[in-house]
Amino acid sequence: MQPPKIEIIPARPAVCRDQAAVLDVLVRIIPPVPEVHFLRPPINLGIVLDRSGSMTTERKMEHAREAAIFAVSQLLPTDRVSITIYDEVVETIAPSAPVVDKPGLVARIRGIMPRGSTDLHKGWAAGAEQVVRHVNWEGLNRVLLLSDGLANVGVTDPNTIRAEVAAMAKTRVSTSTLGVGKDYNEDLMEAMAEAGDGNYYYVEAAIQLADIFQTELNGLMATTSRDVGLRVETARRDVAVQVMNELERDPSGRLKLPNLVLGMPISILVRFTVPPQTGQPELCRFHLDWDEPGSESPGRRSQVVSLAMPAVPARQWSEMPIDPAVAEHVALHTAASARKEAIAALDRGDETTARVWLDKLRNVIANSPRTEEMTSEWNNMQETQSWLNQGQTGSARKAAHYQQHYRKSGRSTPPPK
Image (tube, one colour):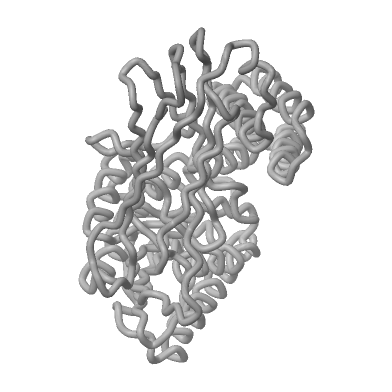
C-alpha cells in the first residue's frame, strides 16, 4: 500500500526577513488510496452491551439488539466476535469465535433483556478479555462498549478505568465507546475512547444506534494505518512551536493521532513564532510514523516532509494573502476555544456565562467564510443553543462536548447522531 500523503499549507508562502512573525501552518494527513484488490485486515471484535434497567426506556435495548445484529451481519467468517452483557452481573453470552454461526449469534442477541444496575468497568473488562485472548497482530482488535448510564457498581473511579483501558491498548486491543441518551458520563466515555485508541460517539436517540455501529464498522474495515504519530522538528532552536489541536503526546513528545481511515483526512494546525530569517531557510520537518494493519512486512513505517520558504521584507510579508484553508482552520480552533469555555461554564452551573461564550462562538462562525466545515459548526452551535433554550442543560453539554471531541482530534465533522 502507498504511504499516507502529507500536505503542508502555510498561511503565507514566506517567512519574514527583518522582524519576528507568527506563521500558522496546516498539516493535512491524507490516508492512502489502496490498490484495487485491497483486502481488509481481519477484525477481532468484542461487543459489550449495557442491559441495566434504564435500557428499557425509549426502546434503547431494542435498538441496541438490532445494532449488534447488524454488526454481526457485516462480519466475515475470517473475523471473530464476542458478545458480553452487563448490569451488576456480567455475562459473556457468546465467547469469542470465528463468525460462522450468524443465526446462533442473532438468537442470543435477541434474548438480551434489561435489568439491574451498571457495572460498566467489569463489563468492559470482560469484553476486553475476550478480545485479548485472540489478539491478531496483523488485524484490528476492538472492544465496542455501549452504555446509557453512570458507572455505579464495582470500579467507578475514572482514572482507574482510563488507566486499565490504556494498558489494554498497549496490547493492541483498542476501545470505542457509545454513550446513549442523557444520563451517561460523557467525560468517562470520551476518556476511555481516547486512552483506548478508539472512537467516542454520543448517541442522542437510541434509534441512531444502527447507523453508529455501521460508522464504527466501516471505520474498522477501512483503517489503513494505526498507532499514528507526528513529530514537529524545527530547524532552529529559537523557533517556537504551538500545536493548536488538543492532542496527547507520548513520553518522547510525539503527537498521538487517530488511526487513518479511508476518506477521513486529519488536519493539524501548528503555529510557529519565527525570528527574522535570511535566504530560503528550512523552517521545520514533520515526521510521520505508523503501523500498517494486515501488512505482509511488519514493522513501523515513516516518512519526513520538510518546509522551506523564502525570507521577504516585513511589508511584503504582511501584504501576502492568507491561504483560505489555513484561515478556516484558525477560525475553527477559535470556535473550539469558545465552545470549551461554554462547556466549563455549564459544568459550573453558570448558564449565563455559557450563553456569552456561545454568542462568541456564533460571532466567530458568522464572520468566517461559509464553507462546509463552518456550516457544520453553525449547525452544531444552533443545536447546543436549542438544548440550552429548552432547559436541557445536560443535553447541551453532551452535544457541545461531542463536537469538541472531534474538533480537537483533527477530524472534520463528527459522525451523524
